[in-house]
Image 1: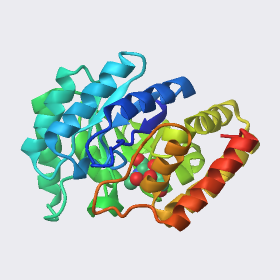
Image 2 (image 1 turned 90 degrees about the vertical axis):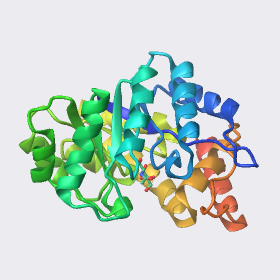
Image 3 (image 1 turned 180 degrees about the horizontal axis):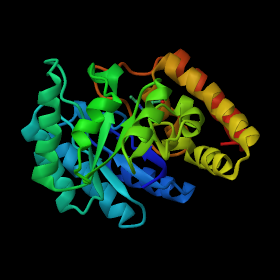
Amino acid sequence: MKGIFTALLTPFNSDYTINEKALEKLVRFNLDEGIHGFYVGGSTGESMLMTAEERKRVFEIVKNVSGGSVPLIAHAGAISTDAAIDMALCAKCLGYDAVSAVAPFYYSFPVPAIKKYYSDIVNAADMPMLIYNFPAGNGFGLDAKTAGEIFGSDRRFFGIKHTSNDLFAIRQFKDSIEGITVFNGYDEICLAGLSMGADGAIGSTYNFMGGKFIEIYNSFLAGDIARAQKLQNEACEIITVMCKYGVFQCEKEMLSLMGIEMGPCRRPFLPLDDEGKEAVKKLYNKIDNGKNM
Ligand code: MN9
C-alpha cells in the first residue's frame, strides 16, 4: 500500500445522523479523482464521536461503494482493547485490507500496556496493522525504538500513519524497521514527508482535493520537485484558512459547495461561523475559477 489515501469524512444530516447517500457520493467522488485508497473511521471521520454501530455502518457503506477497487484501511482504535478488537473483527468480516489503531488514550497508559493493546488487536483479528501515531491527539508519541519493539518479527505490523510534524521520525522509522510503510499524516507537510521517505500520505483535505495531492505525489516520484512544491504551496494556502476556522467544518463546507451535502460536525465541535463560511466560499470561488484543485 502506498500513495494518496483519503481519511474519509463522515457526512451527517442536520439531526446528526449519518447521511448515507452523501457518504456514497463522497466515496464515488474520491474514486473519480483517482484516490489510491481510503482510511475509514479515523479522526477525520469523527469516529470518536460515534457509536460502535455507526462506525461499523460506515465501514460497510464504504466497502459496498468502493468494492475492491482500491485498498481500504479501517481505523479500529478505541480507548478499550475489547472495543478496538470488536471494530477490527467487523472490518475483517467486511473484507478490509488492513486495520489501523490510535494508541489507547485518557489514562496515560504506560508503554507496555500500549504494546499489549496492539498485539492483542493483531492477534485477535489476524490482519495487517497500520499503527496510527498521533501524539498531539492522544498524548502518546511513538518513537523508532518502541515501534521496533511492537513490530518485532510480526509481519502483520506493516506500517505507521505518522500524524506529527516530526519529519525526522519518518526517516528513523524507515531506517530501523525493514520494509515498513510510512504514511505522512499532516497534509500541510505532505511533500516534506515524502522527501523524508514516506511511502504516501493519508489526510483529510484529500476528501476534496485528492487530485491535487495525487499530482504532488506523482510529480515527486517523477523528480519534478518544482511542480510538487508549487502545488503543495497552493494546498497550504487553503489549509491555513481551514485550520483557522476548524478544519473538518471547513472541509465539509467546501464539499457542500461542491455539491456533496456534508452537514455539520458532531458536538462538541462548534458549527462553522459566518466568517468561516465566507472564507471557505472565497476559497471555493478561487479554486473553481482557476480549476486548479
Ligand atoms: O488524517 C488529518 N489529521 C487530523 C489526517 O485531522 C488529526 C490531517 O489530514 C489534518 O486534518 C490536516 C490539517 O491539519 O493535515
